[in-house]
Image (cartoon, rainbow, N blue to C red; front, top):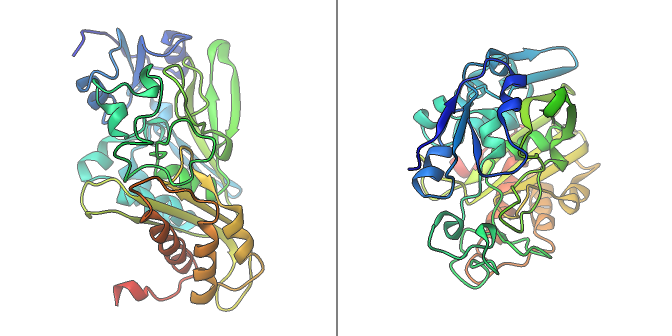
Length: 334
């Protein structure tokens, strides 16, 4: 691991002032669960590390009548166990409770989960000529791609977007507050926060190298919501497919409106599935309609050589997430 200078600012403004306009030389440290791995893999080799852990304002949760604000430094464990968040935003807290194991959830943060690097093994292998590290093409397109994207249209890189909190937050209509140099602040809808990287100067999100996510705001709309993920093992594993849903109504025969269905781990960015939402809009949530929405969710998918199995997983995950949000029996646990 390369030696680095360590900084511990006490305000967001001080932290941003320590960042640089280009990626690579300076990295931010929150929980460190991703940064440490990147350093050990020689993917990140910063000369400067800026710790965010002394900035108390990044670790607060405020729940009001119209919205809730969650600081970027709040841990996953705190999110998953917070009573008001569990009541108002099940899609978020359900996803947070499934991430990694207890050690990861007690260290990992909201901001870190939203801004983490992708998990592609070609990207994480220092010896691979990955497109995102200066190579000429994406090795996964013709290589080992069983965990990669199935919605690959026009994407030169076929990573699967790694954030499992982003799907629920997008379904709930959340936005991120971003702080930049000279105290410039902007709000970014999380549905527009993610980008598909194509080179070493890109990241999986739209932040500049000298910007910092300070908090996430979620409108309180009384939505029914849920998240569901499929993974090979229950403990400390990354999901293969993840889905978050949110809608008004939809219970006890009532029609669902404002349906949002977001797919994770299947595209270089979290995918808001308009076809699945249209299949369900104005209809009650029941097993048949949830099944139809699942089938609609995979329209347009173009699997790679080894990940066609994800088609069926998406169908099932959409169906189960909708049934969870509608309070229907969990037939798969019978």
